[in-house]
Length: 81
Image 1 (cartoon, helix red, strand yellow):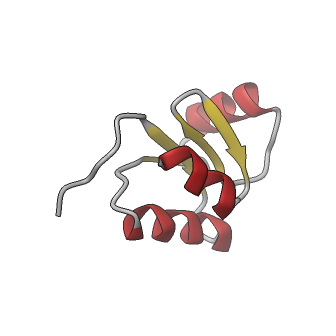
Image 2 (tube, helix red, strand yellow; image 1 turned 45 degrees about the horizontal axis):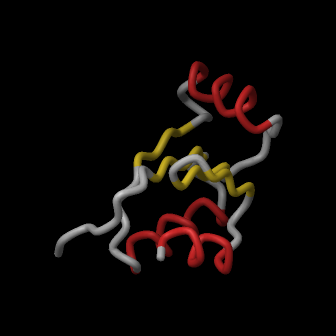
Image 3 (tube, helix red, strand yellow; image 1 turned 90 degrees about the vertical axis):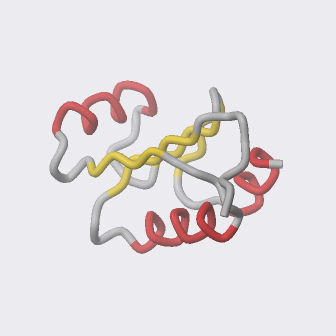
């Protein structure tokens, strides 16, 4: 199964976050590869996420330069097309 898309996808998550799981399942179902950072364990990535987004909640998702806060399926669908 080839993963498609030119834009880099980064998702900041925590293990217990149901919306993080939903976002990862969405990307998997759409064959989009992503880089995941667990901000519960990786304090440097947590700080990076807060600085980039101004948010402490997860998921924070970047598709290329576009930031999506939370699991917004419609917005993510638009960004990966």
